[in-house]
Image (cartoon, rainbow, N blue to C red):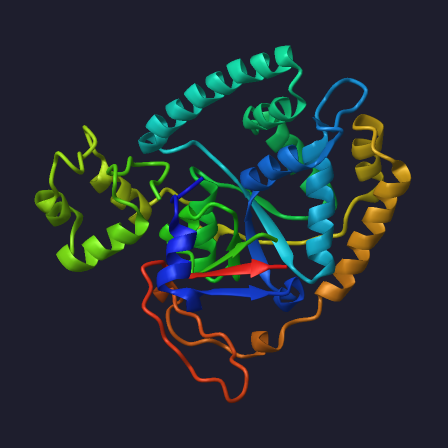
Length: 345
């Protein structure tokens, strides 16, 4: 997903932009989370015996268990999550979506071959490649979040673009997603683990590091293309690099000023009715989770010390100063990324 090789590129050329923190260091922070990416992770990881969790009707429930418990864990650590759901994908992404359909069709064939051969590991591998987040998954997670008292938003287009817009507007502290596109959409802070893009093909033979070297030397993509050996580095036909560049600069996003975020008390009985009555989770475990969620809300009312001080200057400048330990030297690094990547433990 996103810009291939961007994380490694930043680690190589701007290592100071990446910092690993304990999750507790984000106490009191509001974080915009890419909901579709989270749901996809739950469908891949929350399994029993290699299969997704299901109720007696055969309905998948892995996404609900993952969303329920990960959200509780974040709240227990003082993080205030707001989930952002994908809208309609931009037209520029249609080529990438077509390629994904082709890869899914190929994975389906390989899965059938693995099943016929009785190769269990191969079956599991290709089954996961066929995982797809559906409208039903999204709708059920939205319903769950509303019962938990957790806000969610519907983006007009790409969720990571709207997450970035919320960060730039100061509505939330950071965006949380594994999709590196969030940085190119301008998010000052990206949280992960709590480079052809999806929009434009790459030039064969030009990786992230060489691309940076070329742009520093020639200053523009047009000049790079003019000077490249077309036999050694063939430019894709109908290459849409200008359109991709414009999409990152002016993506279709929700209006941050119209957003009002509110975290409320969970509705325990409705949660039990939905998660236990309909989806057949253990009532004891769900009620225990609700108690943890309610308790976490009491602690989350405490503010951060830095919330008492106003920050001057424009948030859209994508530069935020973090407190540094005493005696540490202040270092500034030039980076091609728009923000900082932070990994939570």
